[in-house]
Length: 146
Image 1 (cartoon, rainbow, N blue to C red):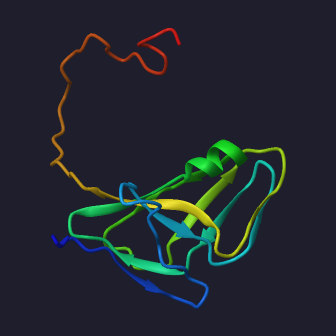
Image 2 (image 1 turned 90 degrees about the horizontal axis):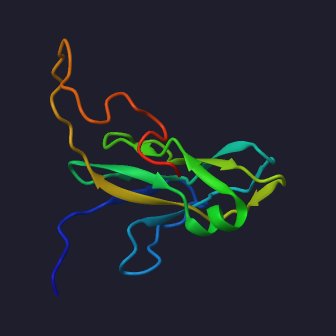
């Protein structure tokens, strides 16, 4: 049996914490669980605490991403989803409720997923001007009609 030498370490900060899990062996991320109950007002937001801290593998950051079921069924989205490699605090999840009704988060609910991604940090080089492209400064909606 092959072993994976890359390790995502975590610690539970309270008895309310739930060990992150993967839905299947092919899942991109680890499900994160709410350590507490919350009510997200209609068109509102909260920061839900997981009561876990993580130590990401060298050269990675953690991306906190939405769970598809919460987004599709309940209009719940996730924001501010970057966990830096050197962060050691309680992992919080910014949850936005875009629905017209309040949404209840129960202790132990799966609220987001944590995806480990490689960091690529190029050196910065300031230039007086940049080379032109066909697109130029065309912004939102400039490459199509839909």
